[in-house]
Image (tube, one colour):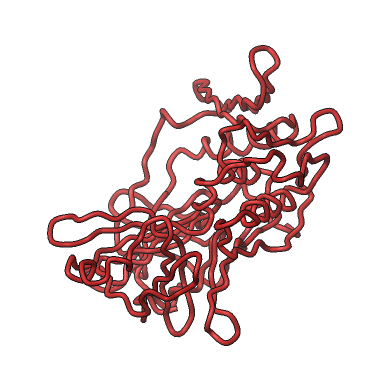
Length: 366
């Protein structure tokens, strides 16, 4: 992928009609996200919008970026407004749509309830239900990935009630929010003859991404900023109390704690949809490990280079990060949780990459 897109395209969500195949967008930023929709933002000239008012219809317009003949990002425009001498807009990818959809029939139209059911299967059922209703089909394809992460027990099946005000998007996020749960991200690509976009939810088990030894991010090579390495004692904890589903004394709770010669600090982490004590315990241990990292790099800005060409990394990958400046010498494996490409940035295209400490993530076969 080259960082500057050849085209920005827009399309009507229901009819599939192309509204623009070469949209002139300024201040363009776009990119994916781990277990979320990612985002796109940009600006148009008011004259263009006045001449073609249907080019931006929030809530029903799809937008894509294309580079070297390949679609790189796709989503729905959700917000647009005039700001000074330009027209600003924001978009988010496919999973954002389900934040505006609800289970009106219960158990996703009779597909549930679920007992010892693969979470990936439930995620696919939620998308199938949402897209089975008139005017609700985005033609999103969900990966056939399977996992050993289960929901529902004979005593407490996993259910969805029509009276529940929780969106379908929130329900999917709960299925993919724990330590021992599948990952997802949103993707798009052309079909074989490059006439129709294939909108996709990528599912990963036990996780998306891989540990990458072929690329790296380093100061003086491709990192162009001096990222902060905060030492946040108020975020530190070696005791994590994970709270799950239930009320009062019936609320599920698991505690992960260690003694390490430091003053005891505790943190409560809420997982309102989690019923299983094993999952709660896994979440508590993962959150404790994360909070015991006193000082980590959460974001870097990079230029394309041979060390890590744009397009060489994927959501979920672990990459070696080396930050050296007057304040710190930081070297660690970091997991990529998202990024935004800024093709028109001052000084040339760049990517702002979001990171998390990677040491506590598990890999297949490791």
